Length: 197
Image (spheres, rainbow, N blue to C red):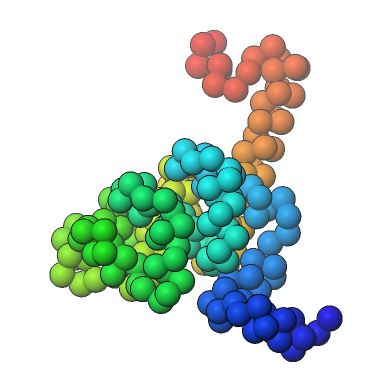
């Protein structure tokens, strides 16, 4: 099936350009396990059930924006689909913060973007959508995978999107776990035990 036919089908179904772009991005950048792993991490980090993550995913929000939706929803104490629906109508992330009575600097994290800017910077200079997406993803992935924010930012510039970066961190984590199991079997010590010697 060629791309023109796919576009016509989406148009016939009444899906927005925004949704189609998100679906194309998701299909081009990820394959099954990597994307599932990213959504699992989002659900785990924000402590939401898998079905809620599925509802957000099914609304075809671009993958890198999914953590932002959960970040805002958690603070606003609303269902993430409410946030996603605002975003799909074209509301900026700064305006979504204002909609829920937050200052745009809600997206500011120490050691995260905007690098080198003071805490009050976004209060006076509303962040662009790309800055918000970077800030939330860098914070989420650095905390979830226990890595430095700069490493997340560097990997993002190399790998293209945060879901792929998350998959890389997850794969490294599994390799470390496997190596730790092998070391425990050979030496009788598990990971984190070396300081006892």
